[in-house]
Length: 201
Picture 1 (cartoon, helix red, strand yellow):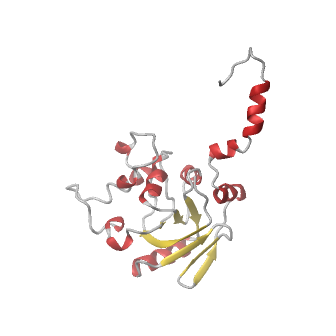
Picture 2 (cartoon, helix red, strand yellow):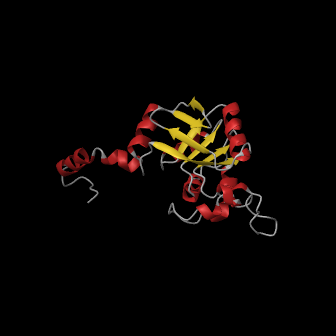
Picture 3 (cartoon, helix red, strand yellow):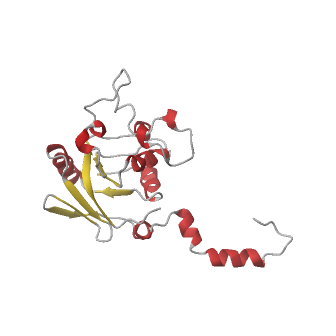
């Protein structure tokens, strides 16, 4: 996955609480194991009218938010099932970070495994960002992972993140990348195994 350093871009406000993974990525689209191609289905039911047409009032369908890189939303984001397709869809749409007061634990971890940065701020701080993005579309936000800061509109705050998770995101290390750091030791171990033992070769 790509390294995360500083994320700078506009925000898309989604002021909804308890947004579950079936709303983020509905079950009928969970038919592939590839991580690409899910962006078009993001918030599928919310983004469409009862007739199936795109709803021009939904935030991601509005032209002023098409280039947004940071999704700002309500508490308990990503609750429900553990489907990895939910963060895949958010990232595939073009978002690089999600800001919320709280996240479901599994969803949060799934984000960090693909290089999608989840940022936890207080509810008051998140509401401030939602209000700014709603009032002034195109407002730019900067998230500095190394400094653990969020800045927008001459305002700045800090956020907490687990040190090891921060290290992985800064270095762009997913689970395979972490394993490959020990590739020489793994290869040496395999070469030294007796022939009568099971092998991956």
